[in-house]
Length: 363
Image (tube, rainbow, N blue to C red; front, side):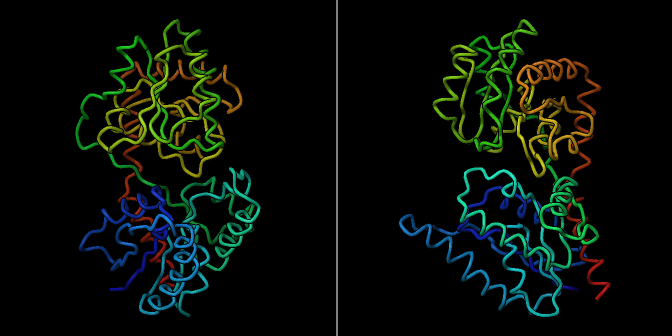
């Protein structure tokens, strides 16, 4: 049996999304699978607060390359599960095949607060993808970005979409959604994730106000994730009134599942997403999505999302109303769930195996 070494994001980078990617794939490995997978890291490291920045740099650029150099010679193929580990590709032992998963190249066209020095470092890291034997892209959108921004040969890029974990059972009642309804919010919209500028959350106050005007119902926003700025909170208060916004912060997997299930619509106004997992997480609960018509989002929605330009709050409001109305049809909700089922993590893992088969057969 051939051996595959998986290398995820270094633990001291604290990359939650990359940890989820690695863990979700690892959960699908079976004893009768054709490869022996050896993954690292196996768990988070304890970080020293006072030295965290130094530890992160040393871990990523000094000790991690050394680990790869020492270990990779015993493997048949090395797979870096995060494009931000591209700098490790040159450290793989001679003769060992290499694969890198590309999630997105957003920093190359949407700086998102990166300093010029950080941007140069990021470009230097991802340019190493040219040296990999294969690049696995999570979407057609990210594949095209790699061709356009890194001049990668499209023939060496294979699209293997992310998966989504389907709910094992109907979740319990969502406390925050129930609280909003008690505050006389008729339609609860869920927003999940970070507050990076590209997430375009500033569009939502006016969009929700427009949805209220169009429908004659009161719309409000439940936020799960990083806290909003005071400026944005004020905008929500002005547009939606008291009780129109509820920030829940971090949520457990059970709480998030309940929120997806009980919300009326999930909104994703981002200007750019490499994949857009909240689309499938919403669909897996039969909950409709209103999202931007940009980057990978239309690709993942496949005609089932209500799309709007990311700079048009009025159209976003109208699409929120449309999404809620479409979901009143139970057969439409069944289509959403079916779409999510097509994106299992097991299918993603099998897609990776096909990439490994191709490379190791060639060798």
